[in-house]
Length: 103
Image 1 (tube, rainbow, N blue to C red):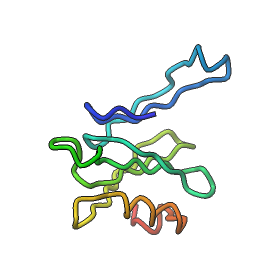
Image 2: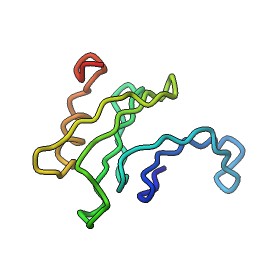
Image 3: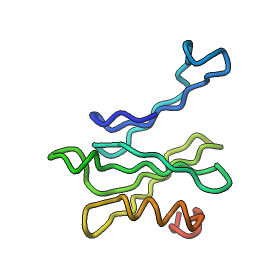
Image 4: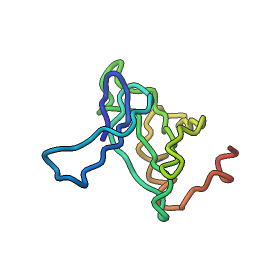
């Protein structure tokens, strides 16, 4: 789950039910955090930081999070057009790995 302002990505445990989620961890990500996609092996989360192109709600970056280690990977993939939608789609469809983004 994401929040746009401030930009955050949250991991919840919903094993006790959807109505009683337990917050496990919150990561700071770019302002305007919106869509999340996962690598094919479900190890990485890619957070799109551009909420509908609204002013102050995105810098066109994608934040990469290692879900197994529950670590924010200090990698920001920026789109030259400041629209991270295509960058996010490319990463997910191509199974981008940590080696591919030079971590």
